[in-house]
Length: 260
Image 1 (cartoon, rainbow, N blue to C red):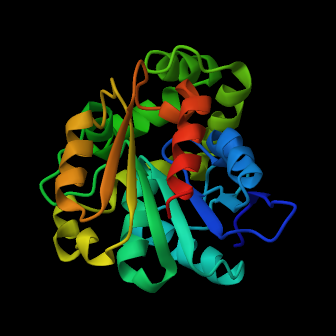
Image 2: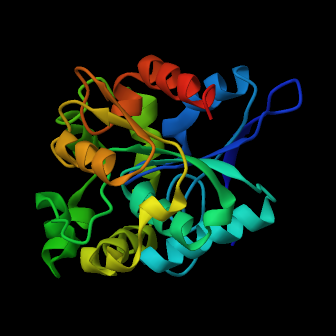
């Protein structure tokens, strides 16, 4: 099924295309400020809702591979060509796999609050989602207020509109089961066959200073392993860095694009 997406296009001929992939349990709504800033800077910006999130239908499978395939199909259908790939959280695990499999399509990378290491470890909530019975109890037991409370323990300033947009991932039984499929469909060890350094493209590592799920140590590891990377840590932010400080994040990405 085609993915629903957000897009901004500059008035003049764009310098290129920026493709943004959201994390869990967000949607393309997380990129709203960045998309506008990127378009103001002269770039086309596109952000799909991944299958089962935001306004995109579930599509029949929520696995890691299904999401990589959905990104590939979206890139081809929209004829996006050579892109600057911007990823956050699960968007990183999905998008960086796609990038390694399609290096000719990647012009540069912006990587935020994610991991892509074969020796990675699942954090506590991820372990719960991966555990049969416990995961079902977690996703089935969350109503909108409980969901808001959970997200605001990490990002206290999330507004009601953001909560409503991200809670769309819980709008149906199949979408909730899709979340469990995603977390249970792969292992970090599978990443051993990928080598991001072979992409040899400029990279910006944009990270929340106080991320409890993907600590900033991971950003420093990316910086050591990528051949042309710069690190920008956003003070006073956590995992949802683009929601916590949209202005600072947009400024950093636009500055990076000026050098790509």
